[in-house]
Image 1 (cartoon, rainbow, N blue to C red):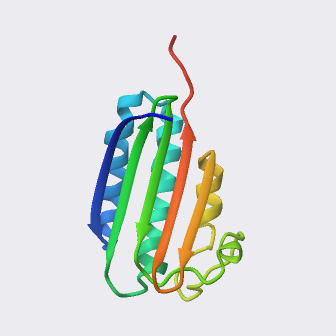
Image 2 (tube, one colour):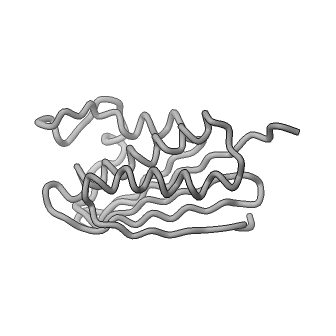
Length: 145
C-alpha cells in the first residue's frame, strides 16, 4: 500500500505533550477530510497511547516518545507511537480491560481497550527494558460525494 504523506514527531515524555500529540495528529489527518467522529476517535486513541508511554513506559523518569503518522492511498491512517521505556512483560495481560500496572494512579486500565474501540486495528509490540510500539490503523469513510 502506497504512502501518500507522512510525518514524524519526537517529543519528551512530558504530560503536556499529550495535548501536543493530539493537536499534531489532528492537523495532519485533516488533509484526508475525516468526519468529526473519525477525527475525535483518532485524537482519543493517540491521547491514550501517548499517556501510556508517559505513565507506564517511563514511570516517573523521562524519555522520548516517537509518533509517526502516515496517510495511505486507500484513506487509511497509520499511526505508530513508540517509547524506549521499561516495556510490557505480558502484552496480552496488559490489553485486558481494567488491568493496570499503576493501581496507585487514578487510571482505569482501559487505555488499550479505548484504542481498540476507536481504531480498526491495534498492534502492540514490547520488549522488557527496550520499550513499546503501538501501531494503530483506521480506514476513513468516503463522505460528501
